[in-house]
Length: 332
Image (tube, rainbow, N blue to C red; front, side, top):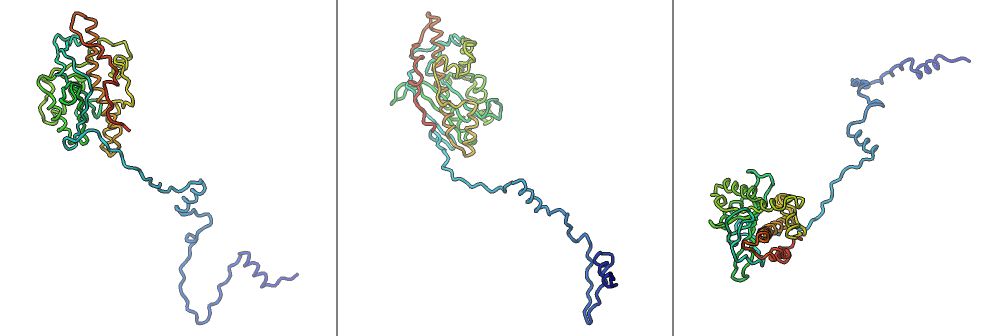
């Protein structure tokens, strides 16, 4: 079988052994210089994909969905209802009464290891709610609660509860001035651990506000110390809540722990709900009323153990707490 020379050349060209000669240019054609095409400029089959395409391919491989902005849900109005009336910019006064008559006679302070007596109407039971429990110059009181026996021309004799609440930092000076106006030279402060915490804290705030100190010159009966001397080891601790439950038979309902009071107030300042702030006010209200009950209870127990001394009606100190403490607003 014979193979022509032309067919053999064609086969060699198809096999790539010999380059195909360029075709002769056409007559009259204009010759242009073509740019040289390098091998690097042509995409190869195994070149990586661009970064955007590679990420998209990886998402499809892993089945990851693209995040879409969440649809905004419409919320109702924020509960900003704060108890009390505004008596100065950012300062509110919450006032209420408990039908709890004052003892008729002066109270001996023998239960507190003191030889003197105190006029019940000179007592001012007080408690603070603060921005922290550690104390120091960075801690401030945002609420001061006080209770005293007071005769009202309309409502008669009873325990008057007044609470000062600030809703702005700038109102602290007004609160301190108002509390100082409640104090007189014959006032006897009564508290629970107030000698070590509440009173020093308020003294610091008066000093930082460049005001005179109205507290240091006053007599102070701290009920923690006689309570601890008498009942230490009887119950698990001598916290006021424990003494309420075990000694006074007081059980608080929907009570906000004092450790959560700072968060409730700061949340309100940031535009949050006032619900927990109302619970703080109710907690503070119960504290100062409990102090009055506790003082009479400690005196009654001491008088029962020492019958030669003057006594007080112990039945009044054992009265159910619900009968002495009216509801302080709804916490909703």
